[in-house]
Length: 559
Ligand code: BDP
Image (cartoon, rainbow, N blue to C red; front, top):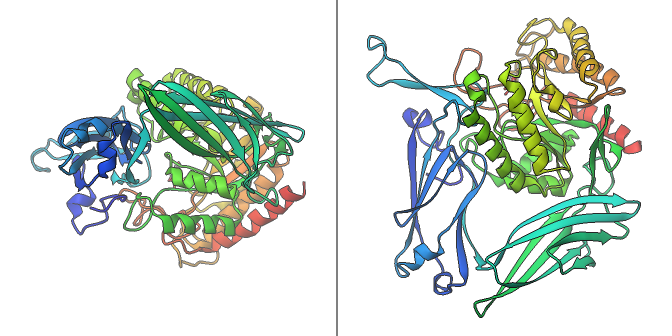
């Protein structure tokens, strides 16, 4: 089985495609002799992500386990491989994709006990989310080394005053010893613009070049390099560790009507994505990733939401460099059952936010955390659940706003008082009033007015859209044709254009591309709400959005 990739679409075997349970990956690698000989070297095994539950062994000894399908985990394996320095290193990873009421996303296993209708022991995996539950090792598995004393983590928070950039940082070192740290900030031309020898502090950057979003500035995505140089002496050995972190200096603020980046109003004109494509499923794929960035830039999109789970860090690194703004969503999708609001679910959700913030906190492109998508926010336990979750996330990161994506009626939404930005999904003239495009102006207007009147917070239309089968044409527009999708989008746009003068701060189309779902009578080989096909070819709607997004960009640029 190739890694990285989902295993589901790789073979011709339908039982593997729809498999639920444990699968096993194993491979032997040769570790450089010098890593083994040098006791002062930490050898770390790192898994970018594996969906959903993983147990890892090295040479038959369990080294770690991890719950959660979209975030990295690692284990130090140096002492283990030193036990048998001449033998190969056998890495075994067992992965289980079963979802329960307490996983994120949640699901249930349902046994079908009627022996007149199902074979013995027959069960199905039920889920409440609209994408295929692809499984396997989705991101690269790496072996890397650090010295025994090493840079374990860096946190940066940025600000600026007039022309001076302020970079508050903290470096944490593990492994003890007598350390010396040198921290330097280098600009793109290779000039050292600030430095320090303290583990934490504030670097001042004169004539700062700020990090700006794509299409908001002529030089978007400006990154400095923060070089952290550690030298340490421990038990009469000397160690040296160097880590370079790309840093963008920018601020994010929210008022009751605006989203500000570097104190200027920012309007999200972007997309919702999925990690999804033919054959590889959710596996990381560089050509696909670069293609998607080219398409987003072609479209004039300045942002996307990582619906409905954290994406590969390689994608966020691209966002930093290209100035694409990100709403970073955790895998809290499909939390519908009241039993998924209990303590066990909440504590796992808190751990996932810890892992997510630890991984993504230093990306300038990430401007907001989304803790869930369309939870059953009307249920009473949602109040305590989201209050706790949002408070926890704000304590982890005091610089970014926090939201979750709602579809619950504004009057019954228990968590809305705690979010900084209201993010609403709606599918007028699709799931309700199917075929009746004429209701969009009134219904969308009512939606915005109600939410704003009640909460006085800026609003993002975090999803809207319609399925269109590429190549299907009807005039007048009929559902599932390219014309209907285009007409629906345009009706939404008319209302956005009125409301963005007031408190609507963004629009994210559902979806960037067609994507695979579970089989069901509402889906014809997947969800077809993409403005691009799954193979990334444009439908008519893509050209409509392209015209609109470039117009919006020109407006923002000239402001
Ligand atoms: C929204 C969900 C999204 C679905 C979409 C749809 O957030 O995951 O794919 O509906 O039905 O409510 O297309």
